[in-house]
Length: 548
Image (cartoon, rainbow, N blue to C red; front, top):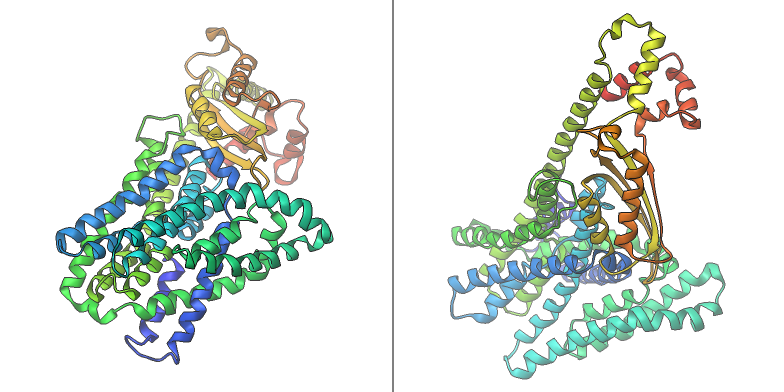
């Protein structure tokens, strides 16, 4: 399925002034759309997950920066090649290809249950940083709208960096403790969310003019206003409850009116516009390339198997440009930085980036899910054959076959482990954990993390892995028992975390029907005795689970 914003943009194109001219007072709808944009940027500030940014570390920032700079540079080179005399236009054209649509990527990653995986968290953090970079780029384009002087270029850059650096530091580390000490105690606990929300909008009305007159972007003011409350769960919940549906409709109006109304659809019949649009689409290769900067979170060869999946998923997620790309293009066109024909070509390229990468992302996830399913079924089939390949098995009675099958499964050479970690969130912690898992040659099956909103929060991580340590040689041949292997994994995790108060617990995990075979297990007894399972042998249960 296409992202919904594609339909919203095409609705604006068809009903807008450039085609049917059906909508009365288009400027009013554009104004409503701009209000939606402000709320979207506030939401981006509130949704900043400081713990995730810290846990991912420098790799997420590096991917975000390269993922913005590289496509901008490619589009700039294309623009210069097409018109070497217009530097302003080339800069504005390049800037349109820097942003990443977190909304589009999140929608697909959430459906595929990849958001809480290391690569999912990497994409989320990189997309959030990309949005921040897009705000800085947007603020700089205003400096190009008039006569270019040293002051007109430097003042917006210094202003944007000052607001982002000093203002961001104050929003994250200074204002929240002050509010917790002096503001929220004045209200009842159940009213803290409403009080914080009211304060946020008062701050918004102050920050937007301040950033605008300081030659930065008013959207930077909206972002910082939301960022102040990114640590407050009550304000976050109240904002989502009160404004989520309104924001959805205002953003539909934004895409239909602010963007769709300005799409020069009649120019798309011009072969030159189509040709240049397809040429600018090459800038997306810069987004795709950063996917190969993703670290190998899996126990496989570099750029093969699941690592290649993570590279492609990251590249296609970053290539979906969406909201801010259109915002920058509209801003550049309104301020005369790009010509109508160039605007049409850029919009065509951004539309392509909004449609094709989500399809490619969904196909990649589906393809590798099918491959994983085949691998799992093959492993189950081999395990069943191995467990049942004893000479003279048919000579045993059904009861004896059942007992032998249980013993063979209990002596499984492929061991599944559950790693549970509770520790303080530290900079770059997740890559260290994954690196340790890779060095142990463990294959990550699932990874789940929980942490409260805030800076110095407690991280709770649960990682399910497959260990092939005993696949070639059993415990006696290796001289190592499963308990020793579990202890080794536990020690490796403790060394990776390096926190005195951290808690690490590594236990053996029996997936699915294997729980029914574990002795002394309450789960197994209820599983075997429940409903349809009561009269089924372990062999039948394994066969049924393997077929699903």
